[in-house]
Length: 497
Image (cartoon, rainbow, N blue to C red; front, side, top):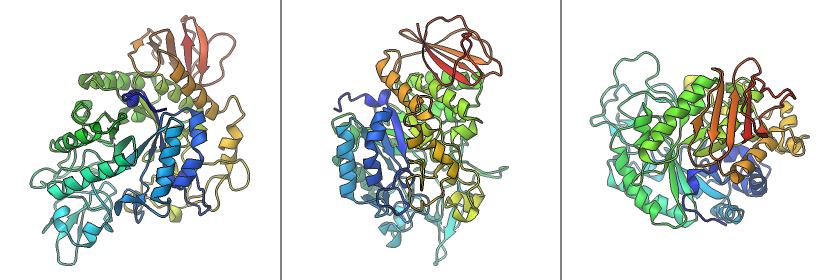
């Protein structure tokens, strides 16, 4: 069922945060078997691929992004046999599997670090002024007085990519998972492996030197040498059949810099975080869309669209309401390129803002007071009892019973069924997926887009209903439409002309 080597160009990819998706063994932690048991749900949703956040052997100092063994599954999540079964079953349903790759840093429990192989990490006699993304200094001192670099938590020492053994190791890791049938990789901190020569100070700055998903220019991110790594990786990906791909999580200073990660000799895609950061306003969305498409055209690759992920507050909360979140989703799914969904957004889940401090596990909270735990709360599957979990690792709000997959299943107006309808139309309509768009004249608070052939998309971000004489049949709307033919505020409509 898996043809088309260019599948990633217009794919809808669903991010699974394994710890919070579904729990098959009842220990309160999501696992790979839980994902496998819910593949039917994902197939009915209509996604083309799943992206699994890290499930590797890890002490979980940073939610699995501190990897101790890149070639095995942490017992919390299952076994390699569970992973193989998941891939087999996903492929049988026509769903591809993307896995996270974490090359900037390992766990301090990785055999290399524990064995004291310092040439594979970044050690020096004196620290410079670099700061951790999670807050505080980016250096920790060891017993003999030297310091090691960790751009994230102290338990995540940065690897030394000037060492050819590090490069060879990751080429082998790529082949290990490709041989097991994975269809692609999401490259974590793809801009971070190479540091400026001599490790120069950043210099005095007001506020943090760099932020999660930020665009600051600093000597430890987005150095030109990182592209040599991807030019080593691309022939490996291309040597496997079936359209194997890689997408970069790269925080860079401009779309022009981001475009450099993508091309026939580097990576296939890079995440477009500007769309996620856009305000809920027609002008903001249009500015980001135009800019993103223009820069993607420079390298002949499709852009990606993202509204939520495991690092930022869910867009129901960020945009201020479920109505706005649904409207933004229909806009995103109508844009040319590929779309990445985050588990639970199809249920309309909000950010959980009132988790007790003692339950928060994000290292950014402990070091900087900012927490990503609120978007990582386990998904509600049932509308009664324990909502599908036994003693979940983070508490699920009781009011989520009405947002559960079970509660929304048979409700034609539910957010779950809106996503299903949108993804079904996206597969069926010849104007959706790849291609181009044209802007139609509209009031300042309204976006009107034409996708050829025959589809018009209208988003009203204003405070009053609008009437546009566009004609056509309503295929889908993010919210109820009145009989007078107007489009209410915070609503997106797909029209067939």
